[in-house]
Image (tube, rainbow, N blue to C red):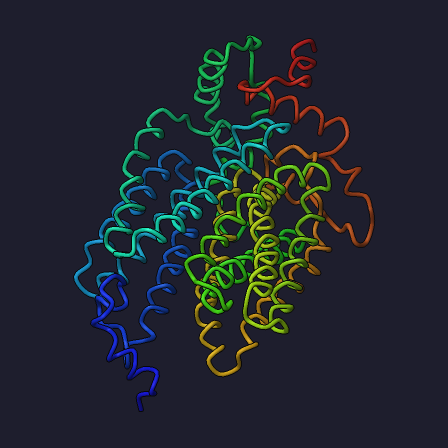
Length: 463
């Protein structure tokens, strides 16, 4: 049975010629297909996170950058030329696949090429660029109302992205983890020459490298199984995956519900995109002031309380303000979560760990439009679910370790030591990857990242 509202929409469909929904006649009995298209886009994110996260740890970061970028560009451009809804849905899936297939190895490269003192600023800069992209989309949507033109405007800029990776170097950490020390040293010396840095004659000690890469020379390549082999690693993986799900669920739930705030949906979407920029600027400094863990806890609580509060506020400007406060919290926590995850997992499974986080995140992305549909039956249900999920995620994060100030774990053994049994005993700070060895690893990391000045590197050269 067709509702009066659906009949009204059917009778009005010829008066609007700008949206894909109207172009493909997605009204009446087809009105749920736009939600399906959005869910398929997030399904592409999910598959891309898993496939490309694993490939990045197996064959290298740089190769997967090109692989993901191809699907991102092709899927995005084909979307603009789709002749029916099914072609549109397929194109959105491949665009989502390429999006994460490109983003994950790029982010890992940034993390592994950056010295500890600069890691936060550089990785947050990557997230801030994403926020500028969101802001650009919101601005373009306000002025370009024809959907094919809008798709091309935001898709064609992906083509020049094929040029910078041609000049990128493979990750030194990844090369060392695979025992390819000669290639790693070539990369270090090439970067040092460009940055006019002086290196010692021997960058990598053969005995140390042999010990560190003993795990990676196993006949079995690193896989998702390594994230669940021990209780400590499994707990951290499941906890972080749940928080990825929650962050994406709330982030896209708020972004897609701007039309339910009682103000112009284009302006609400514009403000929603603009909020991401100051939130990530705060995150850049906040993680250095208060650490990764406590920022995540507080920001997710802010997002959760904000979502639930909107249920009790009438439609209008104040509801929009509270929703944007919630958006501020979840956008900042999302940016920090990328950094936190990359610091939590060791080099052999860093991309896999980040990829599994992406897989979990896209479960939230797939669920968000479905949960929003529940608002047709119980208006307060979507925001209540978003808010309670964020609050639960914040509580679970209390059981996680802090990574601020630690060098990146290079082996599975080092990754296992982070946060091991901290709720039973406080010995993790006295473990085998702390104190003197921590300082040694930090200094060696500085040598592997000659683009940045480091006192530890100078001290190591003297020794």
